[in-house]
Image (cartoon, rainbow, N blue to C red; front, side, top):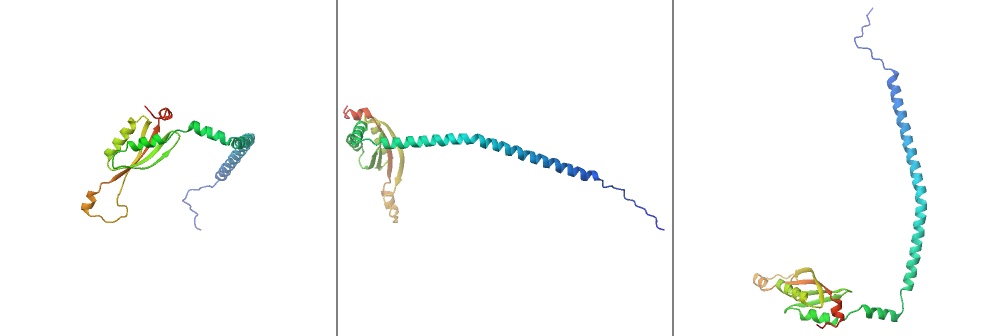
Length: 196
């Protein structure tokens, strides 16, 4: 007969580890279901509280749309009212154009001007940066303008076709500068006729 000798220690797999696993899974399941229930009821209460707010916003929107529609149809006015408004708001532009042209240095070109309610946007081409500074300082001294704001200064080529130019020709041509200036008009001076 062969003796039964087992030198390995006895390890008993008990039901406690399996029980512990089931308990943990059960606790996690209950917590998950509880969190889902809390989330569901809080979302439901938020929806219930936002429905009246949404209804009041819809009513406000409808009221504002109706007010806008009535304002658009009622504000067109007659031709006489429009002419009276333009005469009350407008100002003579001829003295302003004459003033901007008279102050231009030699070898400059007034490209464009655009009038707004408070000022005029002028685009001018200059040969030198010094001519730009002289023109801006003369505009600042003019009684027609309250403020002179230089927007952009860009240089441009006199030969935009892209032809090759030799070195001597390149140095004989002077680059030109395109400047955008916004002039804030002195309304009182212009309304008085522009005379000092």
